[in-house]
Amino acid sequence: MLKIGILGSDNSHAERFSEILNRPDHPSYQADADARVVAIWGEDPERTRQVAEHGHIDAIVPRPEEMLGRVDAVFCVTRHGGRHLELVRPFLQAGVPTFIDKPLATTGADARAIVQLAAQSGAPFTSFSTVRFSQDAQRFLATARQLGGVRAGIYTGPATRRNPYGGAIFYAIHSIELMLMTQGTGVEWVHALEGPAVDDQGNGTVVVLCAWPDGATGTLELTVDAKYAFRATALGREGVHSVTLDISDCYREGMKRILACLRGGGSPVEPAEMVEAVQIGQAIDLSVDRGQRIYLREL
Image (tube, rainbow, N blue to C red; front, side):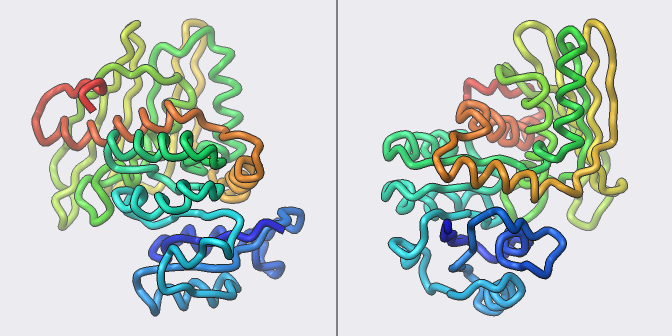
């Protein structure tokens, strides 16, 4: 059985993942996973205790490094992507298989550093939004690939720029990954505009134009006060496909890919795509703040 440690208790994903692996009484439980969350670390003792109790996690450790030698793999799920590099560094250096929940990081520099650490140690490693592996998202991708080449895409989902978790990328990463999954990497520049404030923090809907050198574009519509939903549209040379995604199975489907990777099966997302997704998220905030186009090569 694969023994897993969770880094971070502030994220609801700590509960979702432990339900899948530890709770036979839960509808999401994967009986054939042959894996269990055996330890958790979190900064807030009470919140960590609650997650451990809910997820039937046996051990709470006072410091992340105390999991070394006690677990076979780690999931880093702390919400703020800017914390991920420091948290996973000792595990990747020790060759511990590692999954980093979305977003991988909040800057291109941190994302590249994490990828380099994993490559140097040879540790199995992956990072992604589980939304992309929902069955609906995968069906959308399969159809988009039959459109003769996607020339324009529109991806709608929730996100805010002003939050305690590193800016737009914290939630925009879901829509960013849907775009890159569908249209591929190689975005040259990003230009983002924010609409009027619609909440107490001053957040407005953000519309982001992402451009490839060959003229293809992807538009991200990042909503604040609209219904919580993810929608994807692909406009190809030979057809159009648009769908509102049912992502209710994303944690279960994502877990299958996570465990396969950590057992040595390879990452389902290429490291270059992981890094580019972070660069786009970083560019969104920079573009709005500066009022100009941001080239990814600068990040």
